[in-house]
Every structure is written in structure tokens, then in C-alpha cells.
Length: 471
Image 1 (cartoon, rainbow, N blue to C red):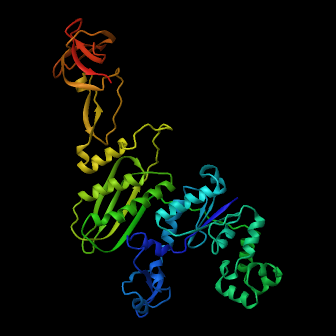
Image 2: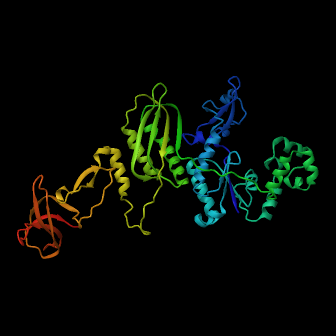
Image 3: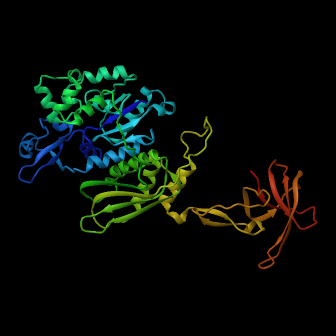
């Protein structure tokens, strides 16, 4: 087996940076500690460039960077975003584990046949993680514990055989090999610096001087003992939220967090190989009940661009009674996703828009009632055989013979005699309750080369009326 470890060193900070446009240029930090002594918990690259470091007091940090933007550190944020990324990684492997904090471990050997060789697979993982806004380091090795330990030092390392893996683990510094801090300190006081120095010690003596977990960890990172893992399973609903940190009164200012939420929803849906047909946006206010904006689609979708566009148009039409402090997206109904079947070489022009996207755009702009479809009605008379219906209603089927794609509102006289008859006659006799109809219909070819649907009185062979045209 082959395991990949995705180390996520700054989960809590990335969760804040990914919802801000100015995160790259503005000093930003997470703050923790009691009110009497607030200290920096994590700092973005712009803050590090100004001399800010974790552990620095907030007062000292303000002296170094007066424009510092701070957020309270949420201790539960890393676990939340780790689960979110596990749902994203579930699309690449069914064996995803949360055994290590701030990291994902997934079995990738079985996925190489689908996603290509490891360099291509790794590049795809990095591209999607960058798009989601999470910094990372990735290491592949034959053992999950070894991959996790190596990710503390390396990024991009890929080891295929057990011998090379043991050599790489042996070269790790003790303080970066996953030992508890007090264990690493005790080993360093013994003059040991690397994992190779510990592996050279007698195991019996090591077991007497240290807890059993130390010897067990040493055996796992060197590949001598298996690591039991519990597999992650994605939940049956999506619930994402962006705290704005300030009051927003315009729809335009909500587009950036909305784009992030719809992208997260799309990544979650792709991970569980599902789609969404209905979700809701909750605009959260400080002194007012949440404003709920329902977003419904006619079909099951999971493409981020379409989800954003439909949600944006629904949001623009919503009446917001108070400034918005937070945006929340909830999707409870997650039906199975059936991808559209297309030709290998799609001849559709690049500038054209798929029908599904155009339909949802019209519904978002004009409202649900403005976009209607046709529904089959149980009546043999062509002018009564279909009725306008909601665009969400099923189209229905008809057992009647083929009907023209263009049906005239009222039949008009055929100007010239048909060139030849292609089908018919088909007798239609119905409507005694609201106007009796008795007609013989023919499919004919006109002198202009069109295929027309004409009718005449029963038994007549002249004076045809044009009722429709076939494509």
C-alpha cells in the first residue's frame, strides 16, 4: 500500500485568510489568552515580514504594526476544517483518516489507476488545496505513520519502497519525528539527535526507561508495526459559515464570501460524489432574525460556477432588513449526481451556454413563475394536447404518433397542393363536450421541401389546412 499525508500546519489561520481579499498585504494574526494578557497565536506572512511572531503580546505587536488586524482564535476551528478537507479528500480515496491533528492520511495506491501516476495525482491535490485556500505539505510513503513524520521536515517527498522509507525516517531530527516534547528532550539529554540514534539502542532498555507509547511510535514510523486507522465518512448535510467581522449593507460586498461558500459546497459534493438541488443562504444580523434566501435548482448540480451564479441572482433579489454580520449556507437535500452524457469531441461552440445554466439564470433573474415548460395533457386534439406547467413539473410522455415541433396557434390554408404524402391519414375525432373535432391528419412534403402536418375533413383529398411543421 502507499499512503499520502497532507499536513495542514495553519488550519485556523487559513480559515480566516481565505475569507479576506486583503489577506496577502495586511498584517493579520489570531489572538488567544486571557483578557489581561492577549498574545499572538498565529501570524500571516505579511505580519511575519513586519516582525510579528506567535507568542508576542498584543501590545508589543501593535507597536510593531499599527495596522494589525486581529481575530480571536477558535480552538474548534482546526478540527472543523480538518473534517471539511477530509470530505474533499474522500473523492480521491475511500480510505481517509483523521488520526493525526492538522493532517489527513489517505491510501493512494488504489487511486493511481484513476488519477494517474503519483506526480500528476500530487499536482492535482496541490492545485485544489491552493484553490480552497489551505497551505499544505504532502509526503507519500509505504506507511501512514512514516508519511506523517516525514511531512514535518519534507514537502514533495515520495518514497516507494520500505528500505528508502526507513533510511529517510532514521535521518529525522528527534524533535521533528513526532515524539512528545518531554520525550524528545529526555532523549536529547542522552546525547541522541536523530531517530537513527534511538534505533541503535537496545529495545529492552528503551522500553524500561520510557513509556510503551515511545517504543510503539518508533516501531510505527520505521514501518515495523501497523497503525490502526478509523476511516472518515462524510456527513449527509453541508453547513458552512463565514463570519464577516464587520457590517455589510450591500449585496456586492457579499459576493466574495458567497463565492467561497459555494466553492466549499462544490468541493464537498465532489468528495461524496453527490449533488444538490436545493440549499438556503442565511444572512445573519446582530439585532434581527436571520434572512433566509432559498435557492432551488431544477436539476442536481455540483459545479461551483453554476451554484455561485444561481445563489448570487437569488441574493440580489432578496430584501435585507439589516446589516449582515455573517453568511451561512446550509444544504440538507443531497441527491445522487448523474453527470451529463456528452460526446467525446463536443461540437458546442465555446461562447454558447449550456441549456441547464441558461435555464437557471433565467429563473434567477425573472423568478420561478416566469420560466415554464409544457406538460402532456390527456386530449387527442393537438391544440389541447399540452398545457403550460411549472418548470419543475415532470414533462410527461405521450403514446401518440410523432407530432411537429412547431404547432401553429390556428391552422391556415395550405397554399399549394402537397408534393407527396409521407404518412397518414390519422383520424382525430374528439371534443364532443366543448366543440366536436373530426379531422384526417397527414404528414406531407411541400413544394418548398418542408415536412408539414396538414389536415382535411374526413374523406376529403383537397383543401388541406396547415397545422404544424416538422424540424
